Image 1 (cartoon, rainbow over the protein chains, first blue to last red):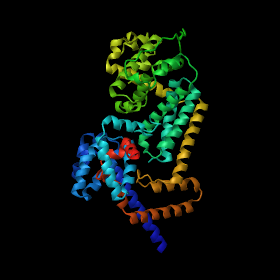
Image 2: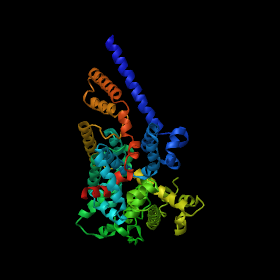
Image 3: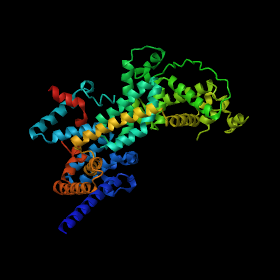
Image 4: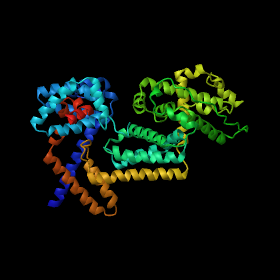
Length: 147
Length: 197
Length: 156
């Protein structure tokens, strides 16, 4: 009978897990007006285009809104300021950004400081220089099969 | 990310029209099959990790690029190759010279039955579509057949929203005139086209 | 005679379709829809050989994806929605269709594993994976996405 109980617990657990997943998916179908006040506050820059976003895009944004309250004010500020640019990027660019961020996260502090410095230098380059660097890069903005 | 079943469902729904669209563009059924086959594998290889909702646009872009590769490999120069060489060229968004030279299709002369009439209609439409400049055909197919919106079409074609609208207008204009020229109205088949909701 | 009646039905004589009519956007849409409807319809049925080849190509692509996902799993972090369950469900479904008891036991053990995995790793993993942390990091998102910046780092 122990085994039966255990099996029953597994089934219950998976049910709740699946229910949670389903709830997540449902949330992505809510219109802007149906979001909570908290969610709308965080995702304010996206208000006008929310209803035009695809479900998976909305899910990602809702994840951001979920984690936002757990952050300190400084980080919250950064999220709010950068959210608009983020939403303007293409899915492909965002995926690339995620990969790079993963690598960046694991670097030692010294290396991170170095990269911050390099970013400042890079931004001081004239746009023509930057454009040249982008186009010379093997997969500049697109996959060869996309372009 | 997509499951194999999602990929299978998407391709099953898209493969026939992908084949026809490609066949109109490259004018070769065998090549069209090869191209679609390539495109399917590329979608799985490179974009299997994407959500299935992105497949429609990705697949269209892969098709366009695979067709472009096909044209580059084509050794045979003929009139249609020359006409279609505006494919992907930098002035594609500017004033396009219209290469349509009317080709005499010939007149059947018989009074067709409804069935035959319908297949004649579709043949005329297919031929008219094949004669369009590449960019116009692309825009027409993406907007009206694939039912993508202007922004999506612009992204796939790599041009501006305005260009998409221009290409579409010209395509419809050219198709309508071509159909009329082929005597579609005389066959009383304009109903099939013009009276649809 | 019927044809003429039809052609006049909409109050416009379609036989004299001219430039000004086509320029009318509503007319343009109607024509475009009509043509594309016919094309869509016609594309429904192809020659048997063509259908066969397309199905074969589709199956090859799908098999490729199934094999790759079975091999490398789903560690891209893009889909957190029960993908493990889904994958195992498919895998088991393909190979064990006749062995219902065995598959039920396997399915349950997978559910247990998933349950405990979620308990152990909690939602901490999800926290780290959310884009919020990307946005709040030292560099702005454009930095991560800029291929030119990549090249700049490499060359220096």
